[in-house]
Image (cartoon, one colour):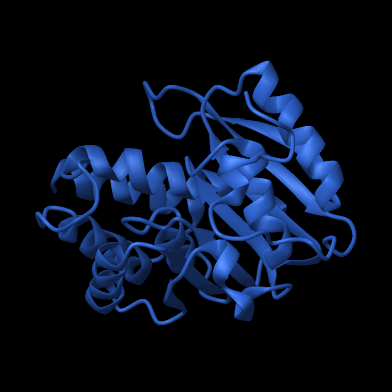
Length: 234
């Protein structure tokens, strides 16, 4: 058994994934060796950096119970594709603005046979069909935390949650995110330290709940959230 297969088996035991689910993840990892894959991490390393990292969010009730998920900035398919495999009861939108990455994501879904996910070639701010329809939005290393809040809030149902994968968050970024959350009718509910694999640099899963309807001025025009973040620069 290869190192990748052994590690996938360990993750399957940890997160109660069956042979079919592990097979889909193995096929996804194989496709990452393609030069067109929008990631430099592949081979044995990818099972931890991409798959274990994505599965770490299953520790959260908000993720395990989700039924309609939008993964923003899906890139090479993580965490969205992995969550679609792990949560077959959920529908997952892989939202990606770059056409080239969307082509790869479409190939990824075809190769893995994952039928409960689909690709959306759009910016989060320019996706009217997604507004107010998701009980979970995920984003992995996408943007400053306050900006991610602005991307996610209009897409969530009331009572839905944003889960953002982040490394170190500075005090200024945290303050800006708090200001953004208040403006967007979100509330930070927990920050979960995550060490998805041995030797990993611990990061955090930031969880926000949507308390009320997003104010009507959001989403703003494409690019404005980054250029003029709600909480100011940091």
